[in-house]
Amino acid sequence: MRMSTVFHFDSNGVFRNRIGERGQGPEDYLLCYDFCLNKSTKEVSLLSPYGEIINYNLNGQFLNRKSLPHKSNYFACSWINHNDLALWSAVNSDEGGLSVVNIESSKQYYEDWFNDRIIDMCSLKPFYQWNESIYFAAPLTNIVYEVTDTCMYCSYIWDFGEKNASAKYLSMLTEIQNPSDRNKKIISDMESGSLAYSIFNGENDQYYFIALANGIGDNRVITNIFYNKSDSEGVAVERFKEGITLHPIFLNDEFILSIVPHNEIAIYNSILNTDYECSEDDNPLLAKFYFNK
Image 1 (cartoon, one colour):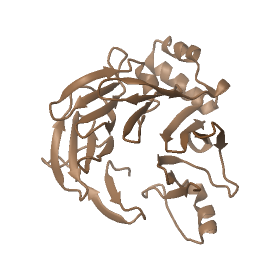
Image 2 (cartoon, rainbow, N blue to C red):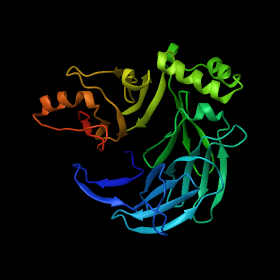
Image 3 (cartoon, helix red, strand yellow):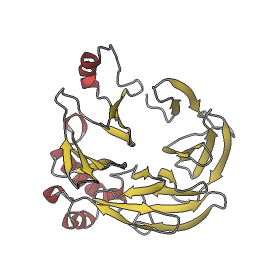
């Protein structure tokens, strides 16, 4: 059974504590759709879809809860600085999907990204952080924006040629009046592999990085693209020679953290001389891929 729960581990994967408790008490949270770390205050902020942030310290002890401006479907969050929070929602095109809020005053500085709700649901975790800045990877486009407390602006653009989701394609989707039919079209194109979509964006001192998926479920193929900032050269990786694939969830200057697919656990055990076991009901098994220095 999937749980809306945040666990705290050290850098070696050893469990330290649980962040908060699920429940309906004054110090509990009912649902958590995302969480982020406020580096200035060393607080872990859990995002409730019901319009609030619940803050805990790194030991998992409750600190406070803050209300957010009224908006449906809060899905993702990222701290811009110690008081200002970037938020992401899949909402109708007359409402901004991205909003920046001062948590202490509950004041919304601005909102942006007035887009189709069904298209936006293709990327419910669009934020990443690098060098103290927050970036937003737009759903079904190759544009990456920097988000500040005053505006968002284009930082860089990926160009994959024929694999780009073209403006013509996106326009065609918005012309499908029935949202259910629009959603079915997107899913069908993803399943067929005709629509490549981003599942992770990131950046470090050396690379711009994106993971593109073709297909859905067990048939999904992930292409991990590293674009070297120093020489403007890129490399695309689908599978390493040992048979391992990369399913990234985190990136920094030292390593990439990847989910280990269940059908590859035996390969890891063979390479590392280990005996890991993990079922679909267990917490995910993660692997670190270190960059050469």
